[in-house]
Image (cartoon, rainbow, N blue to C red; front, side, top):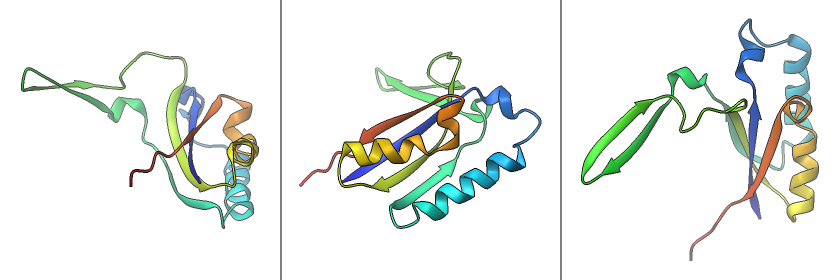
Length: 111
């Protein structure tokens, strides 16, 4: 089954760049779970985001994320896991879990 591991952190922590030691941890995570990782990316800061709504046929774009929060969606991994427990175990190894949170969401499939 596929799971999306959504990485949330306070993006202000990276205002001066990413610590090399932490980047090394992400590379190690990528190597450890290379067979399970089906995709993933880091995201640009929320200041570059837009939220789009359509109401009464009108497109209503607004700058930034949907809601103001202390943590922002900073990236994700799409992984293949046996079950929820295995996906949670993978999420616990993501460095951001120590500073923010990692949401584990099963992918919905349609037949």
